[in-house]
Length: 441
Image 1 (cartoon, one colour):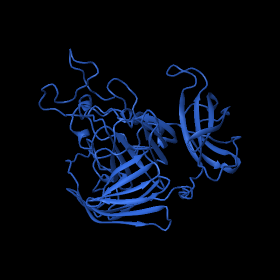
Image 2 (cartoon, rainbow, N blue to C red):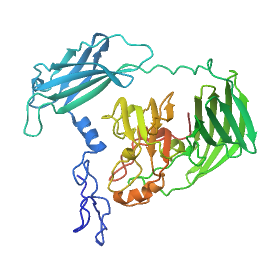
Image 3 (spheres, one colour):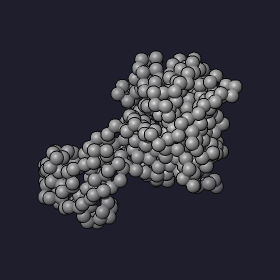
Image 4 (tube, rainbow, N blue to C red):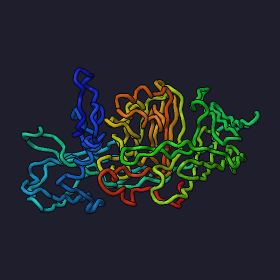
């Protein structure tokens, strides 16, 4: 448990750490090291530890016949004390489910179960099998139905995205006013600053989506208490900007060759936008990390969206935050939250709120007007009302809300470094670091 302490006579929801009481010397946040908060709230760390420690292991045996291998790694408990619930997930939603009693299986024994789920799948969909083991009877420490073990097994991989169909779209028009290049279609338009290379406007049905002209830009920063770094503003320059009609007469292609320079290095990158007459925009980014292994914590793009875009749905890992080295308890599914609700409470505030392996996400206002972002490969996202640098400024979590902004900062990352390590030992394993001398796209 985080060992935060209340101050006598202060707000009981405020927790303090070393140095907050005039104590010198002190260990600062060294005692804020629990998997639950000081007031005993569950955190994503709690769920990750529960998943790793579970004594019942389930995996695929022969999914074509519905067979699943179940391993009992308890020392003294028979599996006949538990129920099994299974659910088939299609594109993030449950489509089939069932229950069964687990059969008599002694400790350190294995059994193969046959589950009666449908074995045929739509070619255009992705399928998972979720498995949950729960208590049959009340225990001193939990009621009947409490889930003690869960696993998710891939049944059918995600198909490739279909190409955008422009056959029903109206022709696009383009115009140049000073340095602003605008491409106009039916009920939508997008504008670019040819000097900066940044998309400065994106409108659907006359409603602006981008706040302050801050479209997609290089994004790299995060700061956590085991990996503290000073924020360095990236100086971003446009090396070239080209706009051409694509092979399809109802599309335009914009190619921006960019460079980002900060205290960590120089990062050349290219962003290609294919604007379709339907209003869909294909975006492909290619970012070069010239640094070494683990020299940068994130590789991606960030944009700032207008205020009011508060409601988020996504299909990917969820519902809690996840990272490359903390995602075993975070299953693929369709989830929803608010931008405000994405903020994760850490007593010592830090970068937070990442969601891994996203298939798609939508962000909309109360009328459901907004944007949908669909990934072709690996994509992580963060949507919050705080800038990257502001999240590290307030030492305590309860002071963060004075930094909240009405607009939404959306980060779309190809990769983010893992969290663990360097507090009382070595840094992250190499496989959880951002690779060096690599081009990401």
